[in-house]
Length: 259
Ligand SMILES: Cc1cc(N2CCCCCC2)n2ncc(-c3ccc(F)cc3)c2n1
Image (cartoon, rainbow, N blue to C red; front, side):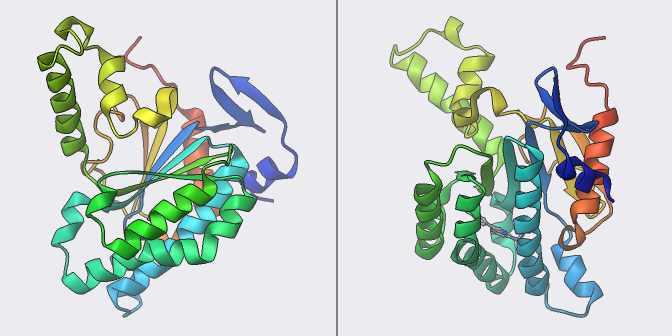
């Protein structure tokens, strides 16, 4: 039986610091994933790139259920970056339909899993149908109290930081706050992850497909995150791969800058 299956089979739980430990597997409170490798997955199979994106969406469903069952509090998925608009028009058009397809087929399971949908990024700039699907899903799951499934959609980390700085500057300019009041908590509250409070910073960031860079994903929040890079392509990421990532996370000795 796989380790993660063992984790699920008999959940002996205890806490180490603020982390849940399930049968010796440390579970990150906030897990973030850069879901890379969808185009390559399709190319290896002589299929169009969009076939990789479609299969990647199925992996989103699988990993959402696994993370929720394992006790993850927040799962943030990098679905579409501000840089993705420069992809071919037909690919962008297909990608913008995926949130609609996702919710058409998965909202009942999200509700069954008590999962709440949230988003970070400029949703208002998305096509109307995409925007409506996202707002409807957020509304339909807003009362759920389990894992937060947080999609980074039309998200860019550097823009997020600049926008937060601008908000604070305006508050000082209008006398709403003093410069001396600008501290990490006040800054973090202006980021798009502010609604997550103490859970805003990912404990573990997974990136698939072998690339080892952050790509403008949560640059402020990732200051003390653990990273797990795997050559596995996102559509092939499954329970066993998640288990390997969590095993690696369990062995990390996090310092948060201290000795
Ligand atoms: C743009 C895009 C691409 C997208 N891919 C599938 C996963 C791999 C990454 C690229 C393609 N997925 N997968 C799920 C969503 C989604 C987004 C927001 C939402 F509220 C519900 C679902 C999604 N969105």
